[in-house]
Length: 81
Image 1 (tube, helix red, strand yellow):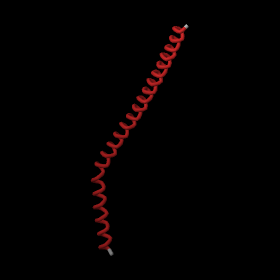
Image 2 (cartoon, one colour):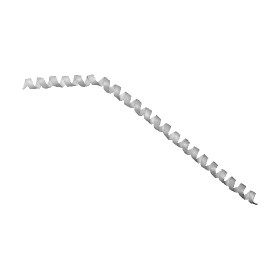
Image 3 (cartoon, helix red, strand yellow):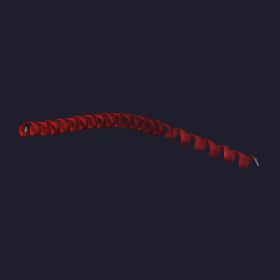
Image 4 (cartoon, one colour):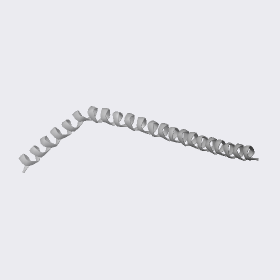
């Protein structure tokens, strides 16, 4: 029984050392993930700002087209009188 217990302790110590050896890679990967997430959040915000700009440009274009159309209609009415 003592032999089995010693074997388990050795195996457990070996696994613990292995896990500790992976820690630097884990820390590095975690930092890379945080960096990528931060960049993704910034890109999402930039995308939202760009979409708002596009929406405003389309709105202004639509208003201009309505004004030009209205001006054209008024000019046609004025010319007809």
